[in-house]
Figure 1 (tube, rainbow, N blue to C red):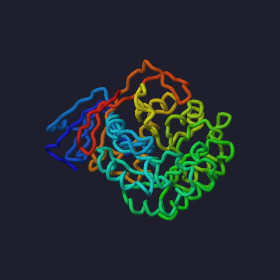
Figure 2: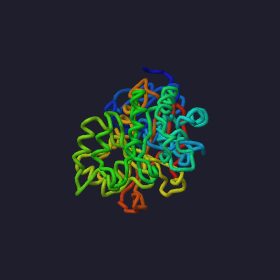
Figure 3: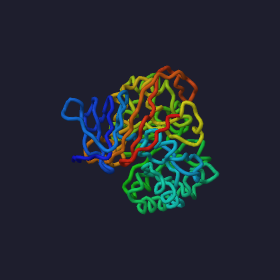
Figure 4: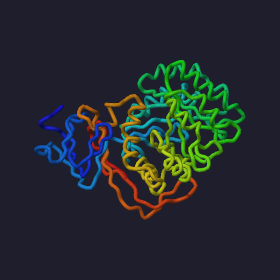
Length: 383
């Protein structure tokens, strides 16, 4: 695909695209909402366009993809403004982890998905009101209606990725967590979709039994928490966790307020177990945090925990695009893909990077310099 007069040319000191293998200085040209061409330096005449932007020290990537976030406009107890706190910080596609359920997803579709510039997919909450009820979301059995959830997923079509199920003891009251998960899986099997699963965080239900109930394509989030059902013991990833991954179960970071601990992340990474996807679980309590809680910051923390850049890049671009079923459309710099782009800068950080326990690691951090969503430039906000 080529265009002699592209609308936008972005030059960067490094183009990085795991999906296509591109890695080097060059430029991406944009025509309309599509990537028109990718030009590596030294391979021909430099491209020109009606608008040209240069970032000689920046890394130009496909737009970042956050598979666990809470984009919204005030109806969910956790949500944050999607364009201000996600899109402007480098994320061009995000998945809402259960901000709406069968009773209110049409409102979420119309007022959030339909209104935001950020591309949003929904993991439908198993509970009818999603995260809008004043009580803990999985604590009322009558709310956990598998049939209604399945119907809503069918109605939602392409807006819906799957179903959000959490058995965390803080959110389930006196309900049996096994029944909660069983209802979530029943709803998912009725429509042939995956679940994103938050584990028990308690010693009353062993992790191996939880994982045994998950299916290929289901995704465990909060994978680096340090609760009783953590994935690491004595510095090694548990056999049941390796076995789950071998069966096709996915593992997602889901940093959040309580679910990223350096000791766990470092041990897992050293044991050859990086996450399948890197995500923020950004929520209302993160607003005003310093440094800002965003996907580039979580990527930086994983780098500080020992994850290589080569392992980080695909887990915020190519891999989450594949998990969403959107490979080729997003997560790639290939000509013809949607022109969702992010330019990141790396800078030393005077503030140590803290995990959810307040433990710190030194190191720099990435932040967004430029965001392009569907060919349109978005003003980046790194602070």
